[in-house]
Amino acid sequence: MMPRLWLPTLMILTPAVLAGAAETKPLSLKAAVLQAEAYSPGIKAALAAVKKAESAITVSRSFLLPNLEAQGTDEQGFLGSAGPVPLQGIAGSPLKFEPSGGLATSLDLNPQYPFALWAAYKDLETAKAKVLVERYVVDQQAIDYYFTAAFQRGLRDVWRYVEKELIDPLYASVKVFVRNGQVNPQDLYLLEDQLWVARYGQASALVRYNYNIEKLGILLGIDSATIVAPSIDALGDPDIGVFTLGKESPYITRAVAAARAADVRVKQKIAQYFPEVGLTGSFGGEGNTIPGVRAHSYSGVFEVRVPIFEGLRYYGEHQEAKHFYEQSAFLVGDARIFVGEGDASFDKEVKDSKARLSYYLPELKNDQKALRLSRYRYLAFQGPLVDVREAIRDIGDTETRIEMSRRDLFANAASKKVWDGGRPTP
Image (cartoon, rainbow, N blue to C red; front, side, top):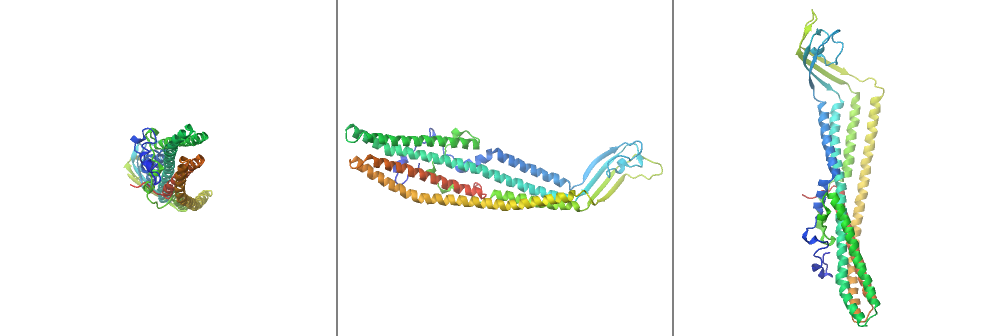
């Protein structure tokens, strides 16, 4: 715990909270967040989904380009009675026999293909937005574990100070008083009770500290034995300012991207009603032709296909896409409400934490004054030990509330930044 005005001795009190801590530099919040992001399997899976979406763009773009293939055939019997239409050309003419071969090309001008490519780009935006959401989840976990561990370390410092600086010196005096018959022996037991409270506070904080450090190590993918969190009192505004101000919450970004992709798919389904044009051509070496038939080494086909009736499938698909877009659009509004409620909650916690600190810090000064006065009166045999014990209790309890308020302030301030799309500063 860092020294305050009323605790000057703490500058020499805390060389190490844990064994070996003095030799290890405390982990920074920024380093914890970046390491968690680098290790996260969830983020890696989301990034793989981005690569998949990029590949889907390549596939969609290919439908806008012509195909080129080599063909060969050797027909017997009724020539040209089988084979793909219109990709026959010289390779499958009913007027030729014996082996034939050549190159064939085709281009299908389907009005859905441009919209499919457009939708693929929108799917890529959605995949990238999901990466942002996954990063927020990981960042939030890192923030929670980090500041909770820092709080528990600060709490252990508090109870260590209570034991070493407030109780131990007085305990030595009380033992002398009891031995000399100057005070009631029960004073020693009362002080010992408070001593055990302070020791339990340290032990409990250490267990909880190690628990959060272990979870942080799992999240970061490193050995928790190598992690040391700073005391919450050693942190300040620069430690929560490691995130940039975001433009938009990742939850809104994801919802908007999904709605845009759904909108393009509505247009794609409408395009089903439009005519489709097919172009086919071939060029190659000819086989023997039927006598009297003029031979050519090339062919071309132009097709127009107009949908007339498809069992209402196009209509059903159009309506399905339309309603899905409506659902996605409503989810954008739902995401804005969700994010707005989160912002309000974070703001409330930050303001509440500041308000608590504004009351607890003056209260702590009063508790310290009460301790100095009650201890002076007791050592002068003018007051009971109960007053001293009560003042020590008040200091421990108030300090605990201060540490907790600091944890809430820092954690919620940092969480709000990542909630609104903030990223670790370069």
